[in-house]
Image (cartoon, rainbow, N blue to C red; front, side, top):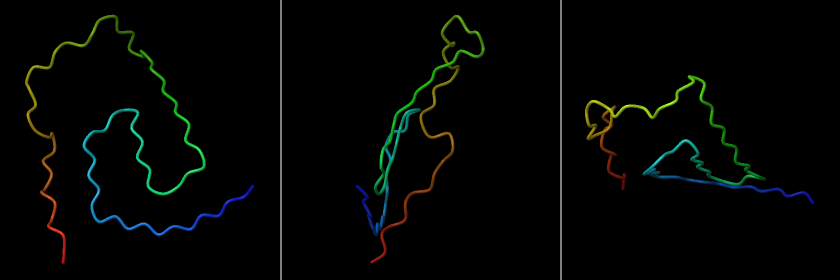
Length: 71
């Protein structure tokens, strides 16, 4: 069976709260999305990483506030 999908997508604002290593964001259609996750210890580490020296309270790169929507 063949499908033809025609779309028109308009996004005025897209806000993403959290992103992780296995995050997927999709806008539109897709035939199939298969997940794949691989974990490698290429450094040969045997202990957990040490705690960070400082605490980060904000973003590493400051982002500008979003502009108000045009009317």
